[in-house]
Image 1 (cartoon, helix red, strand yellow):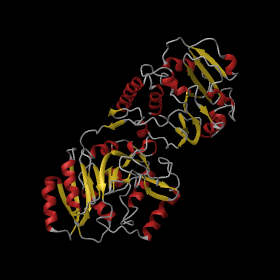
Image 2: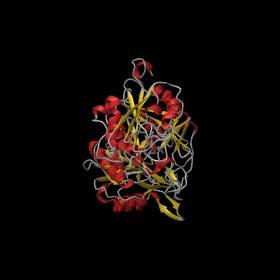
Image 3: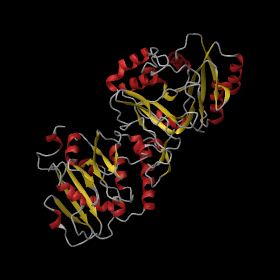
Image 4: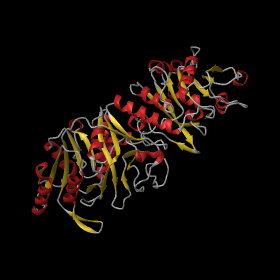
Length: 521
């Protein structure tokens, strides 16, 4: 960062902390002020907004201004009064019980630049470090994961009309949603420099939990309307909110399934894999406009073809395959035969669980610059197989692998639609034009890592992959193919992308960690 451009050097501090305090006679220094005066940087000031008298100026110190509002004033009014007195280039809203680590201002200064709009940090919650993902707009509409130490460009808050009244208990969440919709830059300081007090700011101001939940639903409803549509099914005291994007129109979705038509033992019984996945599609899909493109080997039994035709009816078409096995080439061929605007790549060793499984993926795939959209996949034993990809310290892995079905994951991440680095092509939906622009699956990777390669190609073109927990399937992995990984596949995939497989911005913790179902968000 060019520090002279983001703070200091012009008589204005980098950050002003606005601290509303409602009707409490403070008998000792506030934890937040004590931690501010202990900072290793002087690039800050603060405004305490009070409803009570007498003045606290003598105990506040020279860096802290004092503003009074009348008893009974709303939290929004108090925050706006503090905002009027703020001098910093950026502003944050904290409670008197919050605490900052001594390096907090320096950490913020290291990520803020002249054109930054918002910045947030990692923090310590109930003694545990919350290592947050990079800015994730889709996750934000389901969880205010930015949380407490979030700073906003002061002039941007002014342009938005300040803190909005009428959303008691959701003032800061509302500000985060509104300020990030069109932000130029949202910065993440991946250092835990903040510890929140026992009660949130709105609660200290007297807002009830029920009022806060009503306001949260209101601001999420408005946010979805402003960003393409959707619904808020439920809001929760846990901070995990069930929101869904809306499907726009009813575009044709082509479900592309490569298969040899073989059988395997699942749950102790022999089953024809492709017949059962098609049966589950037909039985459980609520989306009306889809077709099924089965890329089928010539060795497939006639009876398999007949049953598929019976199940799929006019929706199903066969594409004959006579070449040696190459999963990537079979998928590419199926996509070229697909008539749909969107293609859903699907393994034959899967089974649909969720009625309405297509809609959540399609709604995310319709977002601007959307790449692949994946779903929650389970092994036969009901443990998680896939909750998105993470490419971490040269490793390529499935998030959540072997965690219990129903586990919330770290900070509720298994329960939230969110951005990811990539997804498995065992079940992935994408706009056909984006698939073709990226060159499809690489035929140099006939069996493994072709989905990693495709995800990285799309990311290099500026597209973003997503994952949803609202679409669930079983993935009886490798029931219909040889799972062996060839050395040339490793050499090809890592040779292309190893230099980018170090950081995992959307999953910053160990993706191999296994989570129990009873872990709380």
